[in-house]
Length: 114
Image 1 (tube, rainbow, N blue to C red):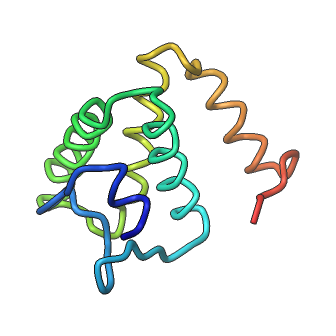
Image 2: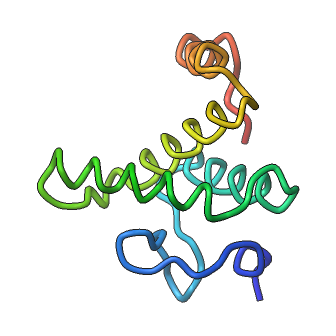
């Protein structure tokens, strides 16, 4: 059994991450890194899974209101937004720190890690 399945409870319906043969799938490397970071922070005890899950529910609901349905193509964007919100609300990072890191990647100051 994959370690991520042990780390997080099942997520069904709109909360369910894209899967193939029960394993998560990703369209781009950043998606797998975002997924892994959230799962790792949870496993390390930084936050309970339900705290992240509630923020993901809110992000999916906001996309549903904006687009009329859940925006499946933006699932990992919603995942990232939920994780950012959780990190800020828990005082782990500030919105300014997250903004600076995003800008570092956008401008090439910080290189992507593969």
